[in-house]
Length: 131
Image 1: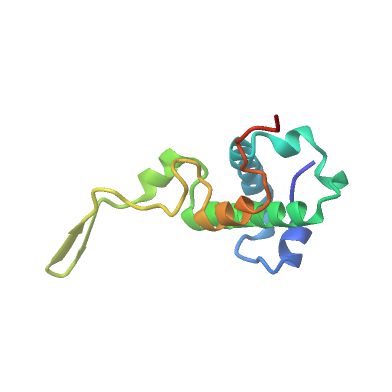
Image 2 (image 1 turned 30 degrees about the vertical axis):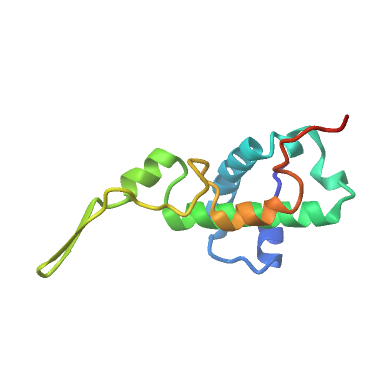
């Protein structure tokens, strides 16, 4: 079962991704979010989670990742780098890019906006459970 369906996506006022591309991008968003949340919603049922704040923010993060993948026209980090131009010329002006800033956290394919939303949910916590 997907973390987010197209109706939920549009109900949250997201609209960048057409319906015919949404399911594929949502699957990639799941993969990338599972990596940084240590598979939280692989191990816990999102539909039965009583922490509605966490569920709501997680689904917003899924929507943001889907939008990011669509806007970047890439589903992997190597595709993202391949799609980035190294040089741009306009008239006599020539710009060269050594490092392109992709707007993600590290090499996670998670846009900064999604990371900021998840930060307050506890899903990114890596400390001790308790003593």
